[in-house]
Image 1: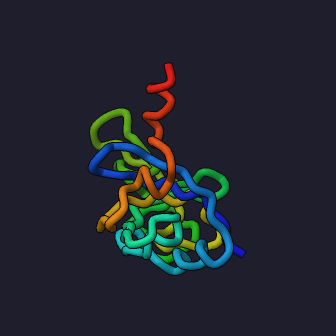
Image 2: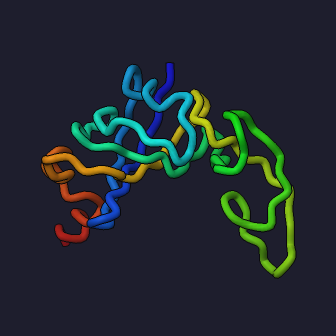
Length: 136
């Protein structure tokens, strides 16, 4: 059975929210790829639509949108997700996970694509990551 930590980004406020999901809610994401949309009810955002923007597996290897399927692949990259070159023209072979969500994914990054009637703060009952700064 799949279980992930989902990081929900709210592009309007800039806040992020972390949710642990499992069971049927996690199964809603299985088989979807980076760039596809899913029902926000799986992460507690009823009436919202979220878009998958990335993620990483249990070993910390990132998902890469230009690699098909859910499996690990070694790709030669010039930069982007999974590798930051130190000089111009530098390339490196790195191991990344494909763009499709599978049970091997530990963290899934999503962004709010379409909003519902209720605000995100009301649905989650918190102020996001900025809440800690307000307490000080």
